[in-house]
Amino acid sequence: MNRWKRKVQALARLAEDQRGKPEGELAREKMRHILERYPEARDYEPVKQFMMSDIAWMRRRGVSTDGSWTGANVQEAVALMTADYERRIEEYQRQKRLLT
Image 1: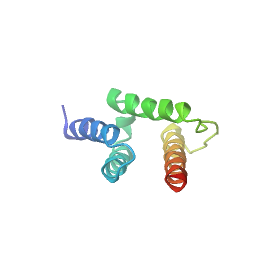
Image 2: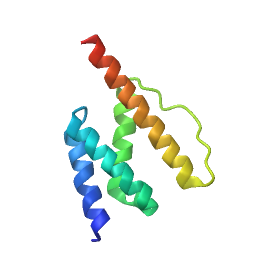
Image 3: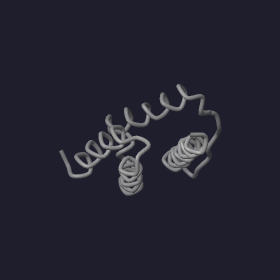
């Protein structure tokens, strides 16, 4: 297993375990950098599972997953979608903190 794969596995576990905490957000940010540097990482199964768990989390809380994203290629469009979803999750969490 190469280096980015080990990092992605560890970061996905940390981000899921620490969701909503600064440690989890930092793990997400590090994962985003890896995905930008290694676009092939998007096809790696732990990344797919991690991204699907985000979508499931959004749906359970009523956060919209609707939209369309256009890029120069598929990787760019997926990156735009991922960034949009992360923004939506952060906004939901920010609103939830304001209400508590």
